[in-house]
Image (cartoon, rainbow, N blue to C red; front, side, top):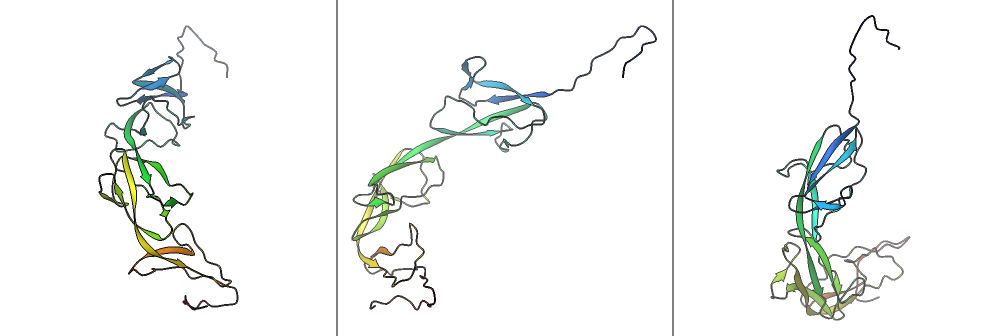
Length: 219
């Protein structure tokens, strides 16, 4: 409503902030500041009140690394990008180096038909070894170019070269006789078994109107 003064008076404006400052600290890297047109060790964005940040992309100059932003300098609490901004905020970059693991199937191929390839993994991070096959052989193990055996528990901290080691094996073919077998990269109707080793578990096929009795070496 309209204010009607009854004498001399001073009126003071009151404000409610509709933006907050979010400052990104690069932690040894550089962040591109589009407003200044250059890379800087930290930049500050204006963020709308009670809304999440409008972008999750921070342009840095540190290639070959993965970055996670934290709300504390001890890197204990990762920043939730979907959270709303209700106060000034400082974010701190924690960097993890990426390494490349190169592999050679040594005559085998992976599920896409490649004889060799590579994959990227974070230093000390989890990964999956390639699924490879070779006619007449079964995969014995993976080794590094130094001859060290590699398993899914091995961790990589630098670029590494792997090669497959094979053993002669028996070819096992599952004839379904009209049935249907669920299979994927691990369970297949044709596989190889090391000499002296069992075939291991195989999922039972299904056939409408029939009960599966087992696998036999005669039809």
